[in-house]
Amino acid sequence: QVQMVESGGGLVQAGGSLRLSCTASGLTFDVDEYALGWFREAPGKEREGVSCISRSGRSPFYADSVKGRFTISRDDAKNTLYLQMNSLNAEDTAMYYCAAAWAGRYGYCSESTKDYEHWGQGTQVTVSS
Image (cartoon, rainbow, N blue to C red; front, side, top):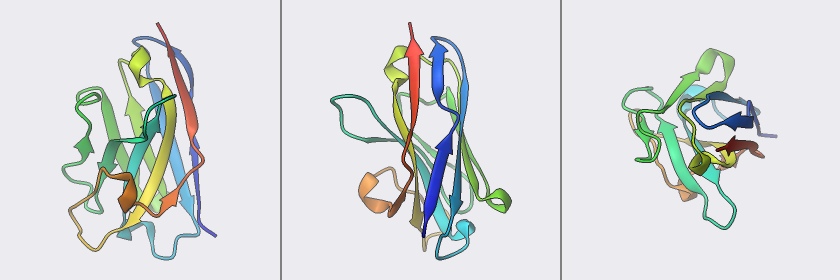
């Protein structure tokens, strides 16, 4: 059974930082065969792609709203995905989800929710202004 477990969310003041982690287990293939992504869903809004990282780890995708503030990384030896979030603002308040997509293309990841087959339960990030 595939499990993806997020952690690291919480309440932070505007301008602060958080580091999210996501640990995967039970995947059919080794985690290094998956593209990994972070998504978020704010109340009343659709789930959106925040960042994703390919199997190669090079040239990750970032949504325009988080460029320069968030950094995605992966440690395949630990089956863990990270999202370092700096300079947080109220608009970053949302439930954050990690996801995995089996990826035939080594250097590509998708920012679309429909391309991911495994999802975590989410971790809440709340930024107070």
